[in-house]
Length: 328
Image 1 (cartoon, helix red, strand yellow):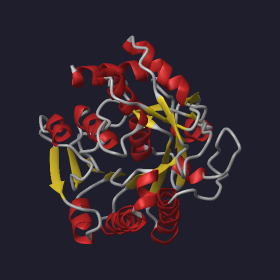
Image 2 (tube, one colour):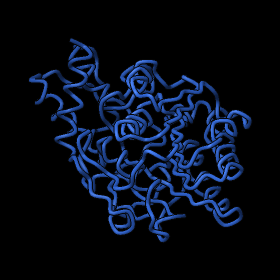
Image 3 (tube, rainbow, N blue to C red):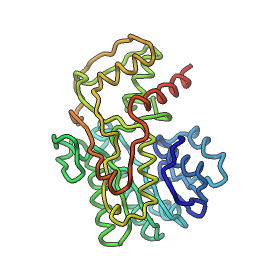
């Protein structure tokens, strides 16, 4: 990651990244460590995290790791001790899995979230940044999606993220914490998990094409998504944690590229880059999925000076190269 998203000296600041052994969290932690943060503490229970991601971080002297669960309030309080800024990424993140396991999702994504908020208040953390999701837009059909217009949730996962936003605002109003919510739109990139029944679409496509194993597209493939390279999510976390703009706090922002592509477009792009004509299999649409997605990113540009640094096509090249190395 060659782009620099901050101007402040990080050498006197302590950061906590929950879920820092996972996909997005490990990229955030790596950025902070690479740019001289005094301390970057990762809290992860290793359910969705990987030792290989931690190994990337261990080379830096400012790295600390706590293996623990955000559902335990004492763990959260201990993890927040001495911390200036928090990037809260720890969560369960699959729509179909949430439909199968709604209570588990509530425990982690809601109880775990309020534990982290309370621990942040108790430890007088300066800024609390957290991952929300574009799923909160639900059945709101207007495109592009604007932060102030959301619909009814279509899955338990979406409901947990909507509740996160409600709790964050309440904690800002009642306890005075400075918080920022980030509604991620289909983040992809290196280190995204290609395995398991709930893996994300891009790693699944690339893995299937490379290994010539069945690749499935839900519905007709005409559904659109604002596929967003992980560097852009890192940028928003860094800028949200470090901003001095008071107007930027206690808001939620879309984190996206501001462009939309169909799933069929995505599959063709994967085929082209891999030099393959391996065909996908179409199956029934997935329950809980929205049809179309496109973000309005004007608010993030205005209040946090967000500028997407890598467009979909360039991010896809980098991501595919990563998975080619992984499977070669």
